[in-house]
Image: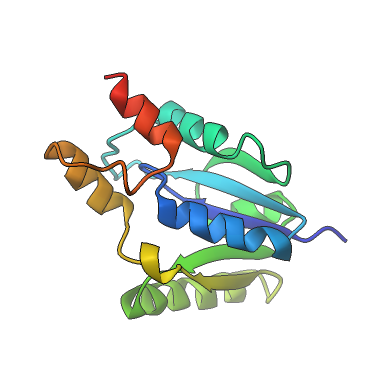
Length: 158
């Protein structure tokens, strides 16, 4: 049976922290689906098309990484894809508390069929978040140390 994990998020934009988690999770799974969620309540800096392009360019050479988009409950998407794992990165204790509640809810909703796997972000990247990157970009700061090349190239073209 293929071990498929879904790594859900808004990826607005993808950061080196996201990249770190995915690269370190590759040996654990046969396939990782990086799933861009759509939340109508959120105001995104980058369009869905841009976010998908950033991810596709970043993972172009990774055969076991698939990029997709979804709406609705993450757990419903995970089950529809035939995955048994949700991959999440943890930067700090606050992330753990937030993610723990979601993991317990997802497990209850799926009759224990879906397991959440947590990886700690590498210490040198644990301070990076998409919201920090967006703030740095909005204020004209040097965001290039926080994101993969695909995001750098996009912003340089503006």
